[in-house]
Structure formats: C-alpha cells, structure tokens
Image (cartoon, rainbow, N blue to C red; front, side):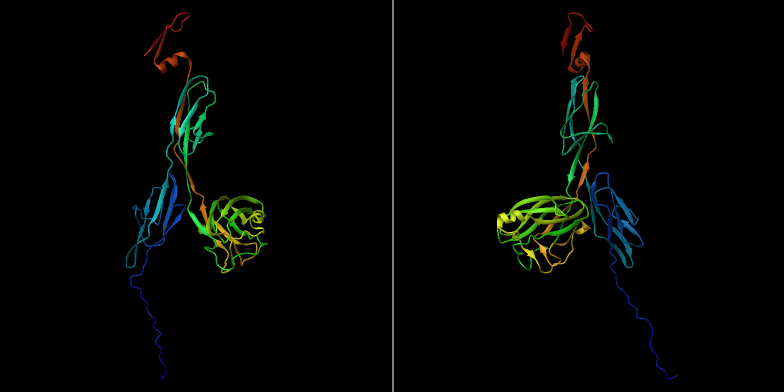
Length: 343
C-alpha cells in the first residue's frame, strides 16, 4: 500500500551462566547455650540440599559447625557461603559433700565459675550463691543441687565518626554533648579522643534530663588515645559529655580541650543490629563532639551447667557414727562398762 514497515519483534536477551548463589538468613543468634537452637533459611530456589543432609528451605540447628546450602539453578548447582554456628557450654561444678553428727548445719562446697545452690534438680528455690553453702540445721541426710554458670561476651560493634576532621576545638565556654539512644542492653566499652593538651577529664553518661548515671575519670595524653568507659547501658535515651567543673580545674574553662568535628557530620550514626543510634549534639546537627569510633559490646550469653547433687550427711547417734567410722561398740545398750573396737 506504499506505507512504511517497522520491525516490532522484541529484542531477546540471554544470560549465559547466571550466578544464582543462594544466601542464608538466620533467625536467632548463631552462638547460643547448649540446648538452644538457631533457624537457618535459604533464599528461594527450586530445591535445597544442606551440608547436614536436610532438603527443606529452613533448618533448625542445635549442634555446632559450618553450614552451607546448595541449590539447583538454571545452569548448574550453586553453594552458599558458610554460616558458622557455635554452641556455648558451662562445665559442671566439682562438688564436696560433708557429714556431721546432727542435728546441725553443714557447710557444702564446690568449685566453678559462678555457683548457684538449689533445693531441687530442676526449678526449685535458689538458696545461695558462691563457692560454699551453709545448710540450715538438719536432722536427716539432705541432698542439695549446685549449678555452674559461665558468661560469654557479646560481639563488639563500632559506630560514631571514625576519626576527627574539620574545626579543631570548641570555644572555651562550650562543653559539647553527644545525644544517643540505646535499643537493647549493651556496654559502651571505649571511645577514641584527640587533644593537644594532656590532663584529667571526667567522661559522663547522663540521661535525657542531664542526670549523671555513670562516669569515668581519665588522664588523657596528647595526640589520639582510646578511653575505656565500660558503661553498662539499658534501653533508653542518653547523653555523653564531660564534667565542666573538672574541665575548669584542669584547663580554667568549661571546654575539655578535646577535638570536635564540623566537617562531614551526618547523623545518625548506627551500630549493626541498631543497638546504638547517635542522633545529634547539644549544638545542632552540624557538630560532632569529642568521642569517636565507639566500641559497643552487645549483651552476651550466660550458660548454665547441669545441676550436680551434693549430700549433707547427718549422722544420728553413736550406732551410725560407728558404722561410718569403722568402730564397733558393745554391749549396746549398756548401763555400765562398754567395749570399743577400732578397725
């Protein structure tokens, strides 16, 4: 018809050997106490073969090891990066029972990391803590139970500006404050600081209203240094600053003579897992004060051993004492002379 023809056929794009390596997500910590578990889940695929032989998309893991998943893709098989699972344990306590002629109390003892005494093998009432336990007055043999607890530190996370840049110091009247929130229990282990003036500072942790909760007095040398704080913190809103009165004593002004940052400040600064979020400063969003490269330790695990029995052996009367000691006494009963034989 004299018109113009246009090729409307689609362009065919073919991917050669596409990379379909699966990923593994976790539900729960990959380090847990004996008796716990973590769920590992593969990204979606047609079929799954885990390194432990399972063939489902998700597996519940209770034993330590390195776990991978292999899937069948369009052009072959692909295996994920490994996920390492750790099972934490606590050794059983080593116990020492005791015996006495009663009625009386008895001192029981055990060795371990952190010992807790109970009146039953499971559940029951916590009776005491420590290497020894003194029973109440007993008239019959009684069994007690002791468990050993072992604490494991959590992983270290970092946040905050990594290092100083920009304007060096705030004015002599300014005592800068960093504001932050904590979303789960952790420990603020340390921070890095920079200064050209050695001297004593007091680093303070306050609540949102300015009430001092914890503090650390530190002599800071010239140049950069890491300041150990070890502030245990529960969820809430906090501030990190210095004590202006100590600054006055050391430097004759409110400023701690620690380097601030006014270049490239971008709030918030957040740890992995959203444990700590640094939200701003008391001088606005363009300033970052004093404390760099925060080391935050997540809450660790406390693992308990099986409870081990300990016997407070109460001996009632001379017959039982003789039996325990290899002593024979006769006649028994007697109203006059008696004979005592020792093995």
